[in-house]
Length: 232
Image 1 (spheres, rainbow, N blue to C red):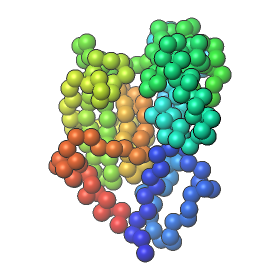
Image 2: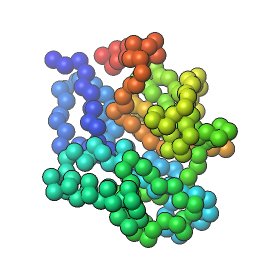
Image 3: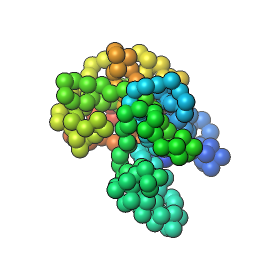
Image 4: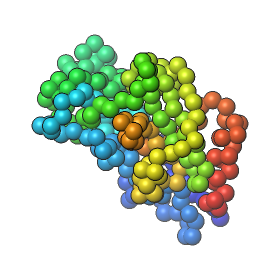
């Protein structure tokens, strides 16, 4: 008999009716985390006509640019998507499709194309970057049970990624607000991406299937891994 079930499907939304029933009495790690769409988690979402004069960012509602869901599309749908992505690389507004692995940042809401507002697969957020001099920052909080660690990436690109990163450091403290969100969402294992803007945490993304880059045998990672015992 199993000691633990782990709900580890790399998609944004899970239909509970399509999930197998776990064995009676066996705990399910992340069993309550069925929808991590940005439309659900975002606290900086904008609607057409909102009173906001600052810069905005256009994103996919699905996690990771909708890449995981792309795998499950039909062959014809994947072909159409690839074609539109190529066109979007030249002019995303004309293609009516976001550039591949990119979220457009616009100077204000008036610059957002009309068609974006009517799309359920896209969202518009206030763009609230964290800055450190000329660099942009992105913070991460990785956790499993009671173990966790945080970090901050520094990059030259507003979309802070490991590919544009120039350095990083580890963080000792996690904002209380994020702990409360984790408790509310009942996330046992995952990663929160966030920034500090005007001293307040702004949650950008919840990842329930995070991966670890770098040294997988580092003390931080090993300590995190040992927390699985808390669920057994």
